[in-house]
Each structure stands twice: as C-alpha cells, then as structure tokens.
Amino acid sequence: MEQIRRTKITEALKSNAFEATINVKGWVRTRRGSKQVNFIALNDGSTINNIQIVVDVEKFGEEFLKPITTGACISVNGKLVESQGKEQAAEIRAEEIEIFGTADPAVYPLQKKGHSLEFLREIAHLRPRTNTFGAVLRIRHHMAYAIHKYFNDHGYYYLHTPIITASDCEGAGAMFQVTTLPLDNCPKNAEGEIDYTQDFFGKSTSLTVSGQLEGELGAMALGAIYTFGPTFRAENSNTPRHLSEFWMIEPEVAFFDIHDNMDLAEDFLKYLVRYALNHCTDDLKFLCEMFDKELIERLQFIVNNDFVRLTYTEGIKILEESGQKFEFPVFWGADLQSEHERYLVEQHFKKPVILTDYPKDIKAFYMKLNDDQKTVRAMDVLFPKIGEIIGGSQREECYEKLARRIKEMNIPDKDMWWYLDTRRFGTAPHAGFGLGFERLLLFVTGMSNIRDVIPFPRTPGNAEF
Ligand code: 4AD
Ligand code: MG
Image (cartoon, rainbow, N blue to C red; front, side):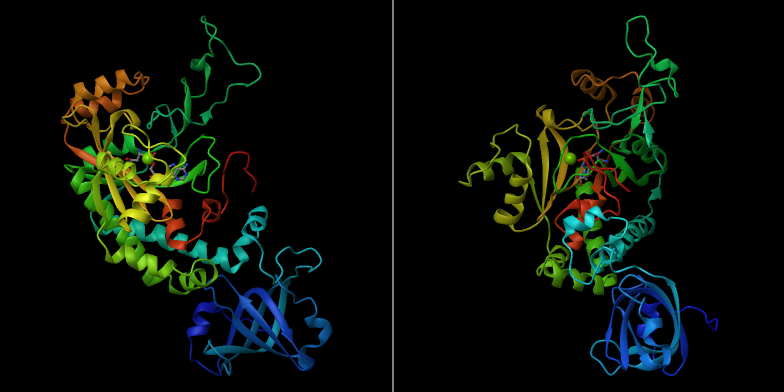
C-alpha cells in the first residue's frame, strides 16, 4: 500500500480538496451495502462524525472485505470526493485498504445497537469507542484546557500540591491511608499502637482530600494560584455524584474576601460553560439529542443569567416555608442534602444559587468566623441537576481564632504547624474554593451518573481497569 501521510477525519470532513488522494485511519463503526458497493463508516476519535468510505466490492473482493466489521481498525487510501449524501461534504472513494486489526463480531462487545450506560461501565476499556464516550472524553479534554487557559489569562499560577499528605484538610477523616508497613504484622510502640515512625515517611500518611492547605501557602507568596489534580475520599457514598477518586480545581487568592470569591466562581463557571458551547458544538449536539433535550438550553441559561446569592439562614427559611416534603429534615444547623439544594435551584429560584454563611459546626475548621460567632464565611455554588458544584470560603486569617477552632474541632495539630505559620508571618485576608471537575462535566455533558464522565471511575467496591 502506498505510504501517504494520514489526514485526521475531522480535517478530511472539512476539506474541499476534492480529487486529491488522502489517507485516513480509524475504527469501523459499520459496513453495509450491496453486492456492488459497500459503505464503511469510519471514525478515528478526532470528531464524533464518521467519514464514509465508498468501496467498489468487485475491486477488493468479498473475501477481503469480510473481516472489515464493526470495531476493526483499517487504513484507507482513496480519493476525496464531494458527498452525494446528506450532512457531510466529503467522502472517500477507496483505492487501497489495509486491515490493521479485526474485531470478531462473535465476541466484540460493541455492536451497532445502542448499549446501556450500565453495560458500558463494565467494558470501560472499550467504551471510549462509542459516540457517547468519545463525546464526553473530548469535552473533558476541552474543559481541562479551558481551566488552565482561564487561570493563565487571569494571572494565576498553577501550583502542584502533594498527593501524599500527613494532614486532613477537610477534617472529615475519610482518607485512604498510604503505608509500606506489613499489614499482617505492623510494628507496635510501647503503648501498643501502630508505630508509624517505622513507616516509609516516618509518620502516618494518606492520599490528599484537597490541595487547599498547601494552596493557601502558595497564595501567600504568589498572590493567586490554582491547583488541578486528583483528590481521594474514602467515604462510602454510592451516589451518582460521588467518586472515591476525582479531580478538583482549587483557586486560592490573597486579599480576596468572600464577595471577590463569589465573583470569581461565577465568572469562572460561565467562562467554562461558554467555552464548551463554542468549542464542543458537535459533541454537545449529539449528547443533547441522545440524552438530554434541554442540555444546550440549560448551558446557555447559565451563561446568560446572574447567580442568586443568599445566606444559608435565608435558604433554610425558604425551605421551611416551602411546604415541600423532604426525605431529610430541614432546620437551622442541618447540613443541606442534595434534595434541598436542588429545590432552591430548580423549584424556587430557577437559577444557580450561591449560598453563604453556613453554621460553623457543619463546615471545616479553616473558614473565617463571622461576628455572630455562629456562622462562617462559607460559600457553596449550587447548580441545577447537580446540587453542590463548588465549595469554598474566605479563610480565617487570625492566628488565635484559627488555633482555637483547631482545638475545638479536635483536629490533630501536630501536623498543622506549617499551616498555622502562614498566620504568624505576614498573614492576610484570603479566599478560595474547590470545583469538582466531574461535577462540572456532569453539568456540561448532561450525563446523569458521575461514573460516566471520568474514563476509569473509582467507587466503593470498584477499581477495575
Ligand atoms: O466542598 P469540598 O469538600 O471542599 C473542599 O475540599 C475545599 N478544600 C475546597 C476549597 O475551598 N479549596 O469539595 C469541593 C468540591 C465539591 O463542591 C464537589 O464539587 C467536589 O469537590 N466533590 C466531589 N466530587 C466528586 N466526588 C466526591 N466524592 C466529591 N466530594 C467533593
Ligand atoms: Mg462541600
């Protein structure tokens, strides 16, 4: 077969260099046709759209064409011609075909018929080859790029915070331990406890639940930073919105108060949604048609409307007066459940909501205490269909108050000295938040299970692939 430089299908479909001979490579979606002519729909992942390969059956022979079934990988040299058919401008008239790899239809699990998302989760190694996961994974890439672009263009530095840590940022205790101690024979100290001085790091360590604490150190030197990395939570939450391993984006900014923080969160989210609308058009159209007819409308709505801002106390009042029957009770001091968040967003305001000033007892130790001594400068951004998409706060910058909160909340403080040092040396008001990357993707793609917006989900009881 003649060696011709490969053209990506996304480029071939846009090209009008008709009559030129080009090469495309990709995976067969379908092959159909008659005794005279076959049509192969070929996809190479560069776009959701397939290019049509027109094959003269007599020229290649039926025997040769037989193994070109759904899932097979082929290389095609052929003439780019104007398509007679509908949507696409271009198709390829095959001159030479090489088969790289076959996919026996008796065992290849991805046949033409639509498969359920549940089934596809069991074959996560192959599901990127479906239209749905191709679309989701391309959108995931574009969103990651847009996040870096947004922060770079706004003067934030990307700070790499550690994945292995000795401190529990959220104080929730839901951490995965990291150890090289022999589990069946752990060394013990005089008190009969596990002797972590003999462990790899000389102390007990875990996978991080958040890069925030180190992020704050960065903000106190570089002014404005963001992190974007994997985070781990060992909570046994089997819900469509929780993963054990997820990616989080955490900006942290010196001299920001909670209002600046809310402005940043709103501008950032709108930028990302607008970016998706502008750069992921074909994939969004597909997901809109297949899964969620209101998807694009909902995305446009976010871009074009102000988020509602109100306090937790006001939110509770609305919920109490709603007459709505909730599974979890509503009272001042209760942690809001997804059903409460979604009621405020979807039923009451019909807009994204930023809820602020939560009771201190349901929030982390580092949040700035309000003058009422009961609430903290927390802010959660609540989105339709998702509930909490962002959690953040203005931070407590006063050494004494922070030390008191750490004590009150029984946070082990021996590994916190470096964090407290920021409040001893040149402390400053500052604020930040965490955006769950997969929650963002749930919203942007319209998918309804978080396991379907990350290539290889980690959830309780599941670490396959
Ligand atoms: O509200 P969270 O726990 O806040 C923090 O970790 C802070 N340290 C962030 C900060 O202020 N820098 O988590 C932040 C966001 C949530 O709003 C949610 O979008 C996402 O992370 N998130 C999860 N996403 C998927 N699976 C889970 N188990 C998640 N837990 C939190
Ligand atoms: Mg939260």
